[in-house]
Length: 203
Image 1 (tube, rainbow, N blue to C red):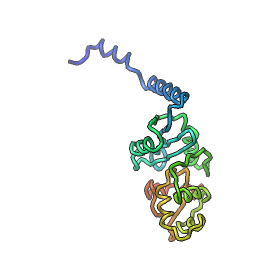
Image 2: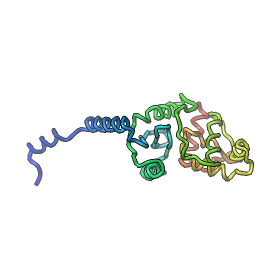
Image 3: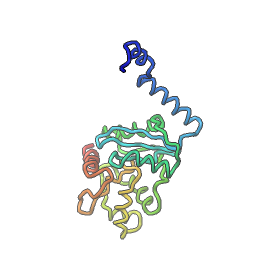
């Protein structure tokens, strides 16, 4: 039986609107962070290469993920690998989100947010730490990266390190190409990689 007009009016007046719900969530977010209950904070941002998930610990930005990776799967892995207290908390990610916006607007050529590199290990971590040394608007081949990190024969391993980079865009694995200049693989897909390179060439 449908509600009467009076009941519908009462329901409309007692159901929180989006602004009220946003304020309640912000209070929850603030309280959780004040009490040290958030192990991984996350938010989502729209960019020219699609929607990105940004996640951070108290140490710094720990994960940037493309939508094609599956945000729920990424968050589940973070909850398993870092800690189960995962909360959407845009305030903690605001500096990173702002810098990403500036990058895509052509106003930023490097990032200076704190990074939590706990997801980078061994040789992959060594490669991923080298990637920010590749200047904005420039590229290196997988072999050149292997030489720079002291293992010239590890070309395939460099490719694997780039493919598993937990911080794409911010840690610029898109600047690594095949020896013939073709794109090679990329976690965000070839179109995203081409877009990032074109953005940097045009700046």
